[in-house]
Image 1: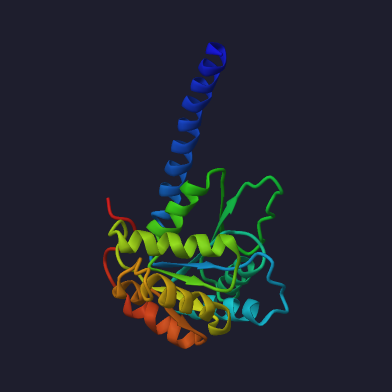
Image 2: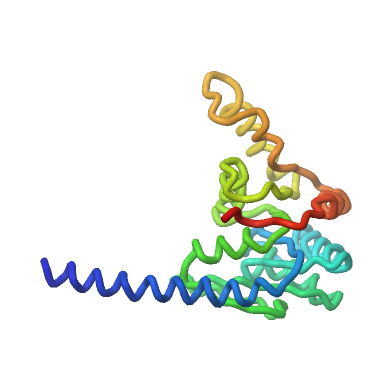
Length: 222
């Protein structure tokens, strides 16, 4: 038993150095990026899906306004956003994650990084983004959305735009947050918290919201 504890200690010690190396590489690479928007959505979105086309078009529009695009580096919505940046000669970043069933990186990101640890990757999404855009997605997309809500609500991140594209997809969640978490007998959030995100179908409105967030400081609070 003591031997196992010693092995675990040594393994955890080396894990700290692996984590540090991912942070250092990420900070060195992403700090040169400039204003950027993180775009999330399902890896399962096919290329003929309307939301794939919307994500691609949104990335084009943002790059035309000198934003870089940050995605999770995989297929689906992530590919669409990196592809849109590629279409207009913009900068697209793919922050790929190593998974048991390997996620194949899409070929459109100019800057490719591979992460072993989800939480290091999460920091890169938030620290270097002026805003989040979430297209319809699964648990990973919801993770990014609720992570941003928690960071903004608690003051651990500067308040930045969080935009959910696709009213028909997000309306159920928005209604549940309002009906269950805010009202009725539960009251688990503040009325102001419902204003931390915006639901829309309009790409133009999305771009306008992001452009209005023309601030000199953004990302995580030290």
